[in-house]
Amino acid sequence: MTTTQANLDDATSFARGFLLASHWAELAPDADAATRVPRLAGQNLEQEFEAIGLLPADRRAALGNVWLESTKRMRMDEVLGVHWSWLTDELLQEQSPALVLLALGCLRGDAPKELLRAIWPKMRGAKSADLDVPKPAPALAAALRRTVHARFTLLGDRPREEQPAAGLLLLRPRDLYLLVQDLGLREISRAGGSAHREGVVRLLKDYQSAEVARIAKLLKGQSQADDAADDEASRAGGVAVDLVKQAVEATGGEGDVVGLVGLGKLALALAEQPAAFVRVLAQRMHRDLGERLIEWYETAAGSEGERESALPEVLDRMRAILTQSTSGSLAKGDA
Image 1 (cartoon, helix red, strand yellow):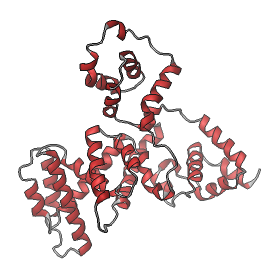
Image 2 (cartoon, rainbow, N blue to C red):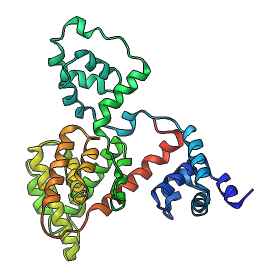
Image 3 (cartoon, rainbow, N blue to C red):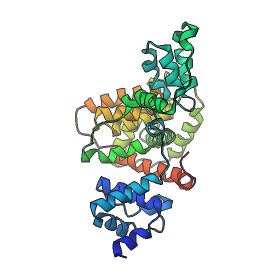
Image 4 (cartoon, rainbow, N blue to C red):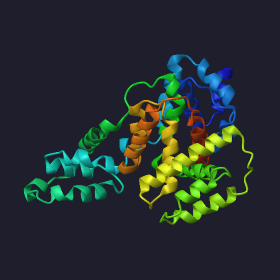
């Protein structure tokens, strides 16, 4: 038995998949990967990553095939995580009620119910004969599902410099929501520093939402901040105040201001990314929020002047969210 084989024999199935993906991306595992992802604990990732690279191409491909065969297969809609609200226009443009019903029958979760409610005004006038649709064979259902979701895939290789942001596409819709909320809370707390607190209080004076109590607590916690904040902290506080103002204006005085502040922060972080990438990420949210993200991203991308990139901070918070999320879910499988 070679040293390379011995190294890989000691790796768990999960670790092998992680290492194969790392090799494909040409990125060695971070030194703290086993800490951030509990299922990698006890693995010698540096040695095992080197062993993967030493394998002949045919054996590495065979190892990948074996790993794929042992991995749960997922449907396209599960992988993409597209929010149902982005499918409404596609179904409204379809002239055949039968095809609409076939498409609805191929989707999972709450999507069919919500979509039917959205397109019902058009469907209610259909003739009974047009609605008599038999259940499709599994192969046809899969083909229809791929057709419906094909426009939401991000095609083509992404350039290397985009890879850090591409990690955001690993987030499930629930984790993306948690990230946006986390970013919003951090920005509001930052805006509550001594130099900016009164401005935020004025912005939220007439705000009608259950969020006010949570925001007030954050601002109170910052009220004793040091008055002699450095220039960098002051600039960051100013940006945070602008994000709060933008969110309040967008809600019209009520709604999830925390989430909208976080959405604004995410838009700033994506300012250097391609529009197609941002659209794919936006499609994992409700369409109203996704379109707002695109709008704010376009504003940030088109602004002139130098600015400090918000992407590193967002990615750092993403890693924290994934660590919390995967600690339990990886052990039991991602449902």
